[in-house]
Image (cartoon, rainbow, N blue to C red; front, side):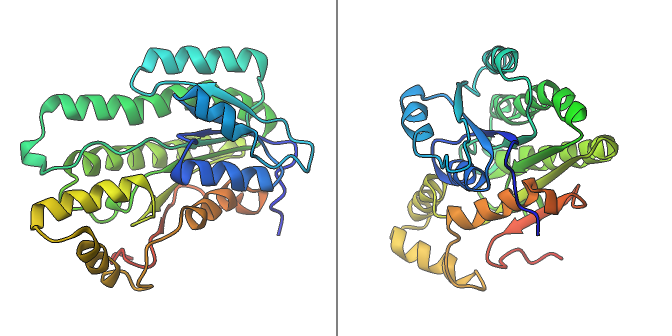
Length: 262
């Protein structure tokens, strides 16, 4: 199976923690030149030094604040002037605040739409010309299992994640002829700071301890545990590899079997 990404360049968003960082590490281990994308330059500078360089990789970082679409556009444009060849884009952005959808302000929808889908559109439009030239492109969007099964208490997130999934499917139909695939990885309950916030939210709402809530959530998962970021990252890395060249337009849950839909 060809998992070799030597000579390929990957942009990985939200890559200073959690699934984003784990994905960057996995892609580097497969030989890719990895560019970390996040807003905290201090963390970026520290973490880029930890990526594997055994295949002679050259790793970089981009400072980009996803709360500002113009900042993202300028940052990626500046990057491409120096490094015009990009083969892999991993879109990943932290989830919006929790709460019932009926209580959400309209501004929450707008800000989340801009932070997620609009930034992804900016990045895709920037890197697809390079992917077309190279005849190789992998776009992987890290979304949520809410695409298949909405999560109670995450109304805004459910809505915007669904929009991203539809956008991604459309891209897969348009770009496949150029050797570019577009897929979504759908994490379930994964051991990240995002899960910590969900546990806190449910604990406050129910009056139960965080440990009680965590144990209840694990009981709802067939493998009876939370997923590790590294496990989700392995799925991301595979979809970015040559071996996954015929997989496009799919929503892949990495959730221990929790999603009940087919």
